[in-house]
Image (tube, rainbow over all chains, first blue to last red; front, side, top):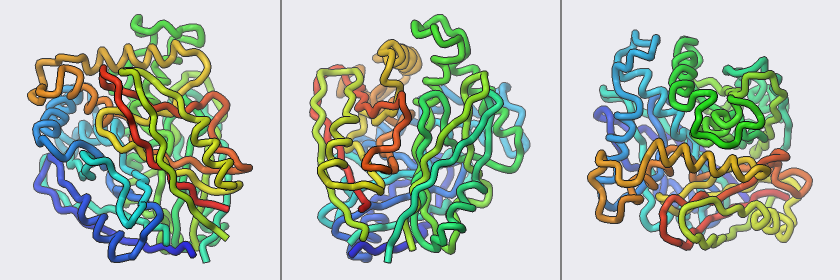
Length: 140
Length: 140
Length: 140
């Protein structure tokens, strides 16, 4: 019999960067006793992203940051919405270029992530924030 | 007992721009009586996107449009597929860079969107189109 | 009564390019006998993407490849993580700019894709790989 549960995670950030939360979701799956099912994960913000990326060499994430900083630099004179700071509109663009919603199948009581996949909150703002993530678990 | 329903939304566009349809999905959730569950939303096109972005200052969306227009300008000589117009291939690229499928948990009879999150159909073509969106609601 | 099934697809690639697997998922839906429901599809890798794009003119996909090759060229001196080859970090960036997780509603025993939508594994590495995709079907 399929059943469901709902959870809200809060990830406090110290400003721009990557914050892994794979284990937090994995613990929710274990506690809810979902052996087979689906995790639907949604970030409730428009200036941060959910990213699945390599969890081995941290240089990969630093290079991702370098690429996005070059692609959409803070203070870009293209932007008109500047009242919230030089990093605000680049943060919205980064969010549009990535994802805020992910669905990951669960099998054998685990998220079916690949060996090198970690689940990250990517904070795009320079200042610290408290980021809220909705998690819906469906399964049995 | 989990149950499900399926809906198709049509969003008519007047050409390139953002069309909010948060309320349309919220109404489906209310009518289907889903208190706890999941909304899976899929756009059936390859030259428009589903975007979750700030619903406060409309300048944010104009800046997003400015950024994507600069990143992938209409008439870019890089492209070979030009038979459908100078804005067609940039539209496909914008779609690839963003999302066409979103999953949003439902709690307390509402999509668990953040305070500033709106759900937008982002039309990338210059001409008006009728865009179809599939919505699967799962829950109880 | 809602029920579920889990499947793993393997897509062998011959290096960078697009590999359509719409039919493989459609066959899973048919075999599982899901008339109404949801397919949640997740790619277990960080240097390849899941892409829904036009399945008509193949030039569209070649243009997508041209655009991403220009946006994030192999051997870009910006990157520090180069030990796995000049195409590795661009592959991670392409993955971050696109999607690895998709949710597609099923109705009338079919994925509710649009007429021109095909489901592609986009291999970003130059060398051949075996790519694993998790598929969760939920429905009745």
